[in-house]
Amino acid sequence: MNETPDVPALPRRSVLAGTVLLGAAVAVAEIGLAPSKAAAAAPYASDNWRFCVNCFNLVSTDYTATSICPRTSGPHQPMGWTFMLAYNLGPDGIGEDATDQANWRHCFRCASVYWAYSSSRHCPAGGTHAYDNTTGYYAPQYLLLHDVGMPAGTQNLWRFCSKCSALFYNGYAYKDQYGLCPYDNVYGHSAAGYDFALQVSNYDS
Figure 1 (cartoon, rainbow, N blue to C red):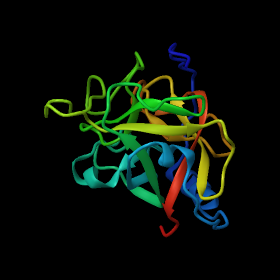
Figure 2 (figure 1 turned 45 degrees about the horizontal axis):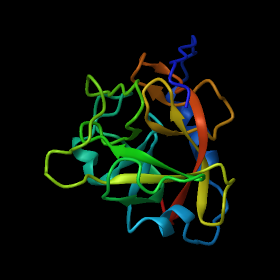
Figure 3 (figure 1 turned 90 degrees about the vertical axis):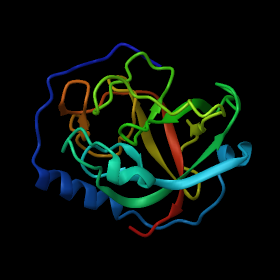
Figure 4 (figure 1 turned 180 degrees about the horizontal axis):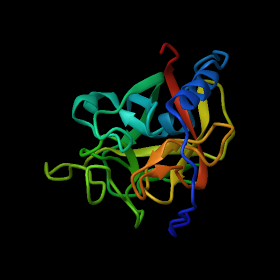
Protein backbone atom coordinates (compact mmCIF):
# COMPACT_ATOMS: atom_id res chain seq x y z
CA MET A 1 0.00 0.00 0.00
CA ASN A 2 1.08 3.54 -0.60
CA GLU A 3 2.17 4.93 2.76
CA THR A 4 2.72 8.52 1.56
CA PRO A 5 -0.27 10.63 2.61
CA ASP A 6 -1.78 12.55 -0.28
CA VAL A 7 -3.45 15.66 1.08
CA PRO A 8 -5.26 17.47 -1.74
CA ALA A 9 -7.28 20.63 -1.26
CA LEU A 10 -10.78 19.18 -0.99
CA PRO A 11 -14.05 21.09 -1.13
CA ARG A 12 -16.50 20.85 1.72
CA ARG A 13 -19.97 19.55 1.10
CA SER A 14 -23.25 20.00 2.88
CA VAL A 15 -24.86 17.44 5.16
CA LEU A 16 -27.85 17.43 2.83
CA ALA A 17 -25.75 16.47 -0.19
CA GLY A 18 -24.11 13.69 1.78
CA THR A 19 -27.48 12.36 2.89
CA VAL A 20 -28.80 12.28 -0.69
CA LEU A 21 -25.75 10.40 -1.91
CA LEU A 22 -25.95 7.95 0.95
CA GLY A 23 -29.60 7.23 0.28
CA ALA A 24 -28.81 6.42 -3.34
CA ALA A 25 -26.03 4.06 -2.34
CA VAL A 26 -28.02 2.24 0.33
CA ALA A 27 -30.86 1.60 -2.13
CA VAL A 28 -28.97 -1.24 -3.79
CA ALA A 29 -30.87 -4.37 -4.80
CA GLU A 30 -30.71 -7.10 -2.19
CA ILE A 31 -28.64 -10.11 -3.18
CA GLY A 32 -28.34 -13.59 -1.73
CA LEU A 33 -25.92 -14.26 1.11
CA ALA A 34 -22.95 -16.54 0.59
CA PRO A 35 -19.93 -17.06 2.83
CA SER A 36 -16.84 -15.24 1.63
CA LYS A 37 -13.46 -16.87 1.17
CA ALA A 38 -12.06 -14.92 4.11
CA ALA A 39 -14.87 -16.06 6.40
CA ALA A 40 -14.15 -19.67 5.44
CA ALA A 41 -10.40 -19.21 5.99
CA ALA A 42 -10.64 -17.86 9.56
CA PRO A 43 -12.04 -19.66 12.62
CA TYR A 44 -14.11 -16.73 13.89
CA ALA A 45 -16.44 -14.08 12.51
CA SER A 46 -17.87 -10.86 13.94
CA ASP A 47 -21.02 -9.35 12.43
CA ASN A 48 -21.28 -6.08 14.38
CA TRP A 49 -19.84 -3.71 11.76
CA ARG A 50 -21.64 -0.78 10.14
CA PHE A 51 -21.03 2.24 7.90
CA CYS A 52 -20.82 5.62 9.69
CA VAL A 53 -22.89 8.17 7.77
CA ASN A 54 -20.69 11.02 8.97
CA CYS A 55 -17.09 9.88 8.40
CA PHE A 56 -17.77 6.89 6.05
CA ASN A 57 -15.59 4.55 8.16
CA LEU A 58 -16.46 0.97 8.98
CA VAL A 59 -17.12 0.98 12.73
CA SER A 60 -17.99 -1.47 15.47
CA THR A 61 -21.54 -1.06 16.78
CA ASP A 62 -20.48 -2.73 20.05
CA TYR A 63 -18.55 0.44 20.85
CA THR A 64 -20.81 3.10 19.33
CA ALA A 65 -21.55 4.84 22.63
CA THR A 66 -17.86 5.32 23.41
CA SER A 67 -16.64 5.82 19.83
CA ILE A 68 -15.35 9.07 18.35
CA CYS A 69 -16.27 10.25 14.86
CA PRO A 70 -13.88 12.78 13.29
CA ARG A 71 -16.77 14.72 11.76
CA THR A 72 -18.81 15.28 14.90
CA SER A 73 -16.30 14.61 17.70
CA GLY A 74 -19.10 12.49 19.16
CA PRO A 75 -20.22 8.89 18.69
CA HIS A 76 -20.35 7.38 15.21
CA GLN A 77 -23.77 7.23 13.53
CA PRO A 78 -24.17 3.73 12.05
CA MET A 79 -26.41 3.37 9.00
CA GLY A 80 -27.21 0.80 6.34
CA TRP A 81 -26.20 -2.82 6.19
CA THR A 82 -24.46 -4.90 8.85
CA PHE A 83 -21.19 -6.49 7.81
CA MET A 84 -19.37 -9.59 8.99
CA LEU A 85 -15.58 -9.68 9.33
CA ALA A 86 -13.59 -12.88 9.54
CA TYR A 87 -10.82 -12.90 12.11
CA ASN A 88 -8.31 -15.09 13.89
CA LEU A 89 -6.50 -14.92 17.20
CA GLY A 90 -3.01 -15.76 16.02
CA PRO A 91 0.24 -13.89 15.37
CA ASP A 92 0.43 -10.90 13.03
CA GLY A 93 -0.09 -11.83 9.41
CA ILE A 94 -1.48 -15.31 9.93
CA GLY A 95 -4.12 -16.23 7.37
CA GLU A 96 -2.94 -13.74 4.76
CA ASP A 97 -2.76 -14.97 1.17
CA ALA A 98 -3.19 -13.66 -2.38
CA THR A 99 -6.77 -12.48 -1.81
CA ASP A 100 -7.01 -12.00 1.97
CA GLN A 101 -5.12 -9.24 3.78
CA ALA A 102 -4.36 -9.65 7.48
CA ASN A 103 -3.30 -7.14 10.16
CA TRP A 104 -6.57 -5.21 10.21
CA ARG A 105 -7.48 -4.24 13.76
CA HIS A 106 -10.27 -2.62 15.74
CA CYS A 107 -9.26 0.70 17.33
CA PHE A 108 -10.58 0.66 20.89
CA ARG A 109 -10.29 4.46 21.02
CA CYS A 110 -12.49 5.45 18.03
CA ALA A 111 -14.16 2.08 17.11
CA SER A 112 -12.97 2.13 13.47
CA VAL A 113 -11.20 -0.66 11.61
CA TYR A 114 -7.66 0.26 10.59
CA TRP A 115 -4.61 -1.39 9.04
CA ALA A 116 -2.13 -1.86 11.87
CA TYR A 117 1.01 -1.88 9.72
CA SER A 118 0.36 1.59 8.31
CA SER A 119 2.74 4.37 9.31
CA SER A 120 -0.13 6.90 9.17
CA ARG A 121 -2.57 5.67 11.82
CA HIS A 122 -4.18 9.01 12.70
CA CYS A 123 -7.02 8.55 15.21
CA PRO A 124 -9.79 11.14 15.82
CA ALA A 125 -9.34 10.53 19.55
CA GLY A 126 -5.83 11.98 19.21
CA GLY A 127 -2.53 10.28 18.47
CA THR A 128 -2.58 6.97 16.60
CA HIS A 129 -5.07 4.13 16.33
CA ALA A 130 -4.47 1.33 18.82
CA TYR A 131 -5.92 -2.07 19.61
CA ASP A 132 -6.13 -3.76 22.99
CA ASN A 133 -3.20 -6.19 23.21
CA THR A 134 -2.77 -6.00 26.99
CA THR A 135 -4.85 -9.05 27.94
CA GLY A 136 -2.08 -11.61 27.51
CA TYR A 137 -4.01 -13.23 24.65
CA TYR A 138 -4.03 -12.56 20.92
CA ALA A 139 -6.36 -9.71 19.94
CA PRO A 140 -8.68 -10.21 16.93
CA GLN A 141 -6.85 -9.81 13.63
CA TYR A 142 -9.31 -9.27 10.81
CA LEU A 143 -8.88 -10.77 7.35
CA LEU A 144 -10.29 -8.73 4.48
CA LEU A 145 -11.06 -10.20 1.07
CA HIS A 146 -9.78 -8.02 -1.76
CA ASP A 147 -9.65 -7.56 -5.54
CA VAL A 148 -12.32 -10.15 -6.31
CA GLY A 149 -15.09 -7.81 -7.49
CA MET A 150 -18.37 -8.15 -5.60
CA PRO A 151 -19.23 -11.82 -4.96
CA ALA A 152 -22.80 -12.66 -3.93
CA GLY A 153 -23.55 -11.50 -0.41
CA THR A 154 -20.79 -8.89 -0.31
CA GLN A 155 -20.24 -5.20 -0.93
CA ASN A 156 -16.98 -4.01 -2.48
CA LEU A 157 -15.48 -0.52 -2.92
CA TRP A 158 -14.26 -0.44 0.67
CA ARG A 159 -10.77 1.07 0.68
CA PHE A 160 -7.77 1.84 2.85
CA CYS A 161 -7.17 5.55 3.57
CA SER A 162 -3.48 6.37 3.22
CA LYS A 163 -3.93 9.44 5.42
CA CYS A 164 -5.51 7.89 8.54
CA SER A 165 -5.25 4.10 7.81
CA ALA A 166 -8.99 3.48 8.42
CA LEU A 167 -11.24 1.38 6.17
CA PHE A 168 -13.86 3.58 4.47
CA TYR A 169 -16.55 3.24 1.82
CA ASN A 170 -15.46 4.60 -1.55
CA GLY A 171 -18.55 3.93 -3.64
CA TYR A 172 -19.90 7.43 -4.24
CA ALA A 173 -19.93 9.47 -7.43
CA TYR A 174 -18.07 12.48 -6.03
CA LYS A 175 -14.63 10.97 -5.51
CA ASP A 176 -13.18 13.98 -3.68
CA GLN A 177 -15.81 14.09 -0.94
CA TYR A 178 -15.52 10.85 1.06
CA GLY A 179 -16.66 11.49 4.61
CA LEU A 180 -14.13 13.25 6.80
CA CYS A 181 -10.55 12.17 7.52
CA PRO A 182 -8.99 12.99 10.91
CA TYR A 183 -5.53 13.37 9.33
CA ASP A 184 -6.30 16.88 8.09
CA ASN A 185 -9.94 17.38 9.19
CA VAL A 186 -11.16 18.02 5.66
CA TYR A 187 -13.66 16.11 3.58
CA GLY A 188 -12.03 13.37 1.62
CA HIS A 189 -10.30 10.15 2.59
CA SER A 190 -7.47 9.16 0.24
CA ALA A 191 -8.05 5.71 -1.27
CA ALA A 192 -5.01 3.49 -1.79
CA GLY A 193 -4.25 -0.18 -2.26
CA TYR A 194 -6.81 -2.95 -2.56
CA ASP A 195 -10.54 -2.97 -3.28
CA PHE A 196 -12.06 -4.84 -0.34
CA ALA A 197 -15.30 -6.84 -0.47
CA LEU A 198 -17.07 -7.18 2.89
CA GLN A 199 -19.60 -9.88 3.62
CA VAL A 200 -23.10 -8.59 4.40
CA SER A 201 -24.79 -10.35 7.31
CA ASN A 202 -27.95 -8.22 7.41
CA TYR A 203 -29.46 -6.00 4.71
CA ASP A 204 -31.92 -4.30 7.09
CA SER A 205 -30.89 -0.74 7.94
